[in-house]
Length: 171
Image 1 (cartoon, rainbow, N blue to C red):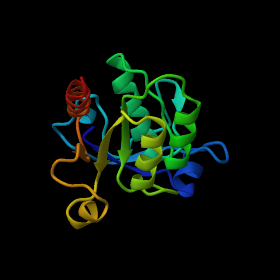
Image 2 (tube, helix red, strand yellow):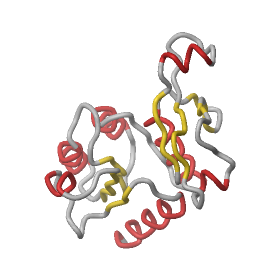
Image 3 (cartoon, rainbow, N blue to C red):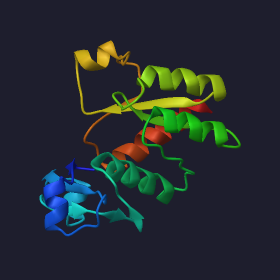
């Protein structure tokens, strides 16, 4: 999306007079050619909600933006904060899951374990990995040249194109 976000620190939350326990994200960097800059987002901006949904963390803001972009394209999107939540969502979901978008490095579960669980419940589901890491970190996580992958940061149009590419290959 052409921006880097960091969690709202307790000091920033106090300065903004946020209710106790309320989180959000602070924009720390913006690509001048990216969608965020085109939308008027600047370093120092604080993201508290997206499309009326409260943002509780920096990761939550990116996840919410990605979901909004895909929903605007007509996709049905389930979101989860980590691998455990993702597997729970998938278990409760009625019907097929065509694509899972996951970060390579995430809290509480390795992406490889998530993918194993996905494949048990939805054997035909495709996987799209994304990461801000590169090189050896990706290789040790099982990401190779032929693995569907998005390098962070990426533009909304890049996300849409990659999702369409993967889903078309499925047919």
